[in-house]
Length: 210
Image (tube, rainbow, N blue to C red):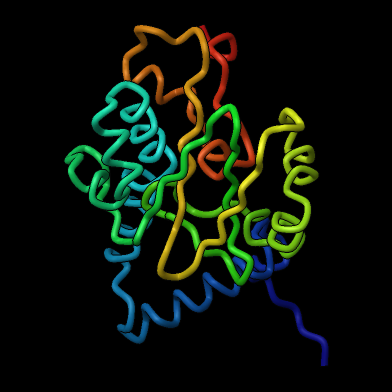
């Protein structure tokens, strides 16, 4: 029998995706049953918004660009070197820094899943987790870089590093020309997330907003 009702089916008009709605519903159930503390969830979200993310990696790269001793330590043991910087989030992963040079360009992938240095780069981008990137990065890295708009000299070696649950990588890109005398903070603004994965390059000084 048909019946009138005036309540709204919010889920039918929500801008959230089906997956997001399911996550919201699961969160509500777990919270109501006392398995999840909403304050703990808020703290985690706040941490990823303000303390964890690519700006941490950018600060590490800028430090390496200006401090030869730190750069040497970073390339020798990235985890230990980063954890000496009190103003940068500590990293718990076994992190390896690989340096780009005019002769070699490094690129990072996780062929099995989506292992990624969250403390330094934040949440992994969707394409990093997608099968096309994971499969093509090892077979056709130069083609993948072209898709990202990065064209390297033909004689530049491209080395692909495969992340695992135990070992993560961060690319130390080359310092852009025309940045002599720049402060670490200013240099960090040139460092992009993709440049630390190896699918991009740092911004050029001319790309900085005035």
